[in-house]
Image 1 (cartoon, rainbow, N blue to C red):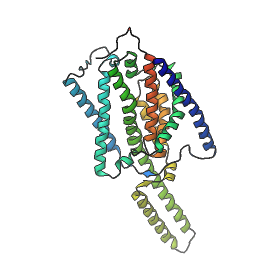
Image 2 (cartoon, rainbow, N blue to C red; image 1 turned 45 degrees about the vertical axis):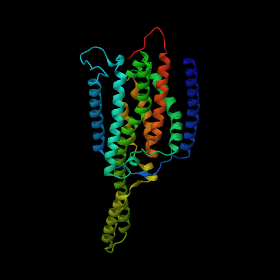
Image 3 (cartoon, rainbow, N blue to C red; image 1 turned 90 degrees about the vertical axis):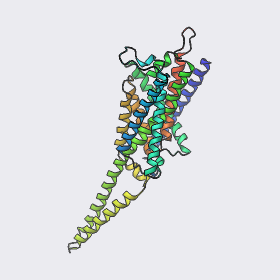
Length: 347
């Protein structure tokens, strides 16, 4: 059985490599033509800010502490001994705590969305949670283009700094089917959804809102300056009136842009890149302590942020994240094997 699964994984990797070469070849053609790798799409403007960022983090922490407290109260997990020398890596309760943390993230997302829907229309669409049919196709193509280079970089860096992660350590210790299933569900399903919602949906959406507002302000100022320069050719005193008209026109432009509920495709393409870079940097720093993973994950995050920036939706990024975690998790389980002489870890 293990041999068959390894063969299937090898076929998937081969197909991904072929897709990677084909995808980047097509990307090179588009780049030579002066076209974006992925055409920007019109979407509703995000309206959330730092308050929603803080609220989501706070809800997640409170719900996690509450969930683990309930689990300890009913004896589902043993209380942690903070003074013990052992680590969580080989703690049989780690998978349960990991599951509680993942469920707390999903609950926090649900509560935040519920609150946002009461104060602003189309809250889910503004956060990129309304999917389209093309999202799966875009995500699979992007996965084929991004995952092989990221894994190659990670494998090279692993020779310098070994990869470390509690999930990897527990899988290598051969958990029971129940704990293994919990680990797989959290790593493959919950983590991509929760992390993409927070980083690409909430954080990047907020950063792009700031970038878009500054862009609109500069555009209005340029319009005002251009219309004022036309009046400079009139030496008869109408220059003042022209200047006042230009200022009034710029004011109306600002009002129209502020009132517009849509971020147009051409405006998306002209947005600065710093929201992508900052979001990707924060995403990689969250994975600090996992060997050299922050380096390769930063490269991956740039691609995920670009997908979200161009489409305005989280579906493609979630698809890529799902494919990466599924491939990595399957490889770890297959590498661990199932030797009969070692008893499985867990209840």
